[in-house]
Image (cartoon, rainbow, N blue to C red; front, side):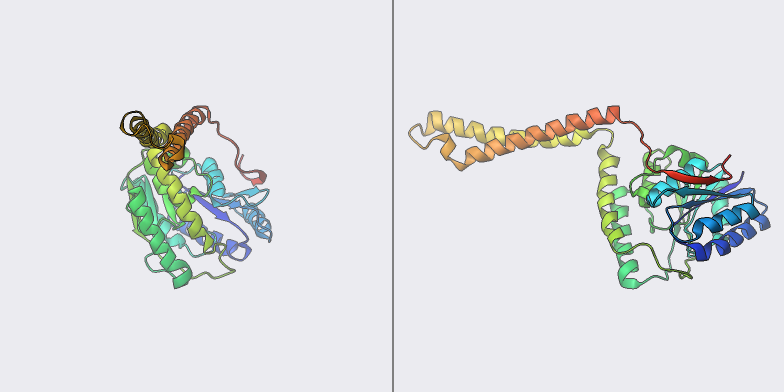
Amino acid sequence: MDISVVIPLLNEQESLTELHDWIAKIMQSNRFSYEIIFIDDGSTDGSWNIITKLSAKNPQVKGIRFLKNFGKSQALHAGFKTAKGQVVITMDADLQDNPDEIPELYNMITQDGFDLVSGWKKKRYDAVLTKNLPSKLFNWAARKTSGVNLNDFNCGLKAYNINVVKHIDVNGEMHRYIPVLSKNAGFSNIGEKVVQHQARKYGQTKFGMDRFIHGFLDLITIWFLSRFGRRPMHLFGALGFIMFAIGFAFAAYLGIDKLFLNPAGRLITQRPQFFIALVTMIIGTQFFVAGFLGEIILRNRQDKKRYLIQEKLNLA
């Protein structure tokens, strides 16, 4: 199979038929063998009924229906697990991503040898204050923190070599950082393509300003996991050593001062430096313990199911 198109969605019943017809037209005109995998992330409208009808009409349409809304990352994880195509294309279901980009994205993976190609919505049709400006700030911070030089981490239109999606684990809300996860997994040949962005035709966006707050928090998480995810003791041990050394130095100074320099002075426990030393050594010890616990958890971690599937279509 040439291409798997993975489409996570939530309450997008108005756009699904048009999106399917558009993708099918592109695939047939380019003679691609393909599958379209819709992941219904707990929709409460008629999205699943439409997916069922599309699957009955076109055997290349497959569907996964979650029992409730688990989030885009979990939907992509399920789609990646199911995908069989040589190239996996992800796009949103709201018609803001243009299926006409698929052939060139496919060629960039198969002919140019990229592991991953991320779309760049250079010209956007979103609100400036609520989406465009926060997105630019977010992308700048992501570039500086991750070392992956992309202009648009949030673009849903991406293409992957099948090996990439089978070797990365997308969980939490890490779908924004799939290029970073790919780089950390060893797939460092990452490209970017300017893609056409379209104004939303139906419904309303499912994301608000809170996604950027969550995005920056996830950015801190991905930075930590990238640098210290496999060696937490390197961070917590270093912090613990520094804190304990500072506290020990204060305690040593107080002891020397009391024994040799000023024996008739105040008791050590009456001096504020004593409490600084005590608290600092306790914090240092706690950092050490956190590092040891992190190492133990890392070595005993087991993969757990992150979503519950209610129905499947054509996945046999």
